[in-house]
Image (cartoon, rainbow, N blue to C red; front, top):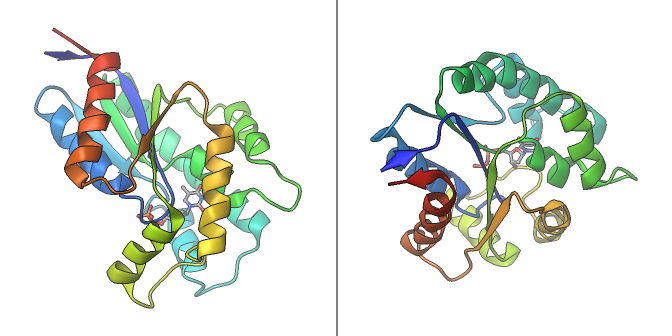
Length: 204
Ligand code: TYD
C-alpha cells in the first residue's frame, strides 16, 4: 500500500461536526505508512492566540479584523509549516483552512467565493482534497453544548451555524468530498473518509 506524496488534505465542517476526530484518524492511518503531519488553524502563532480570544468574546473583533487576522495566521502557517512539510514529501493534514475563512467570515456584502478567490490570489497552496463533514446544525449544537457547557464561541448559535453550513455548500467544488455525518457513528464517517482517500491517493 503506497500513499501519494507530497499530499495536502484539509478537513472542514461547522463547529461540532466531528472533523477534528476524523482528521486525527486520517493522520493515524497515514503516519504508519509515510511521513505525515497534523496541523490546525488557527495556529498557536501570536495571530492565532489573539484570534482565539476574539472567538471566545474575551476581546472584541470586527468581521474585518477577524478576516485580516485569519489571513495573517495563514501566512504564518503556510510559510512555517505547510510549504516546508510538503517540500519534505509529507502528507499534510490541516484541520480548517481558507474554506473556514470563506464560510465563517463572509457577510456584509463579502461572498464566500470572494474569500476563496482572495486566499488563492495570496498564493496559499490549494489542497488536493477537502473532507467536508456535513451535519445538521441542530445536532452540532447539541454536541457543542455537551462538550463545552457555557464556554461556547461566538459562532455557536443555531442561526449562525446554519448560515456557515450554507456558505460551505456554496463553495463546494470537485475538490470537496461531502460526507453526510448526521446519524452516523465516528466509525461510519471514517469508513466514508478512508474509502474516498484510498480511491484517490493510495495504490497497491
Ligand atoms: P477551534 O477551537 O479550533 O474549533 P473547532 O474544533 O470547531 O475547529 O476554533 C476554531 C474556530 O475558528 C471555529 O469556530 C471556526 C473559526 N474559524 C474562522 O472563523 N475562520 C477561519 O479562517 C478559521 C481557520 C477558523
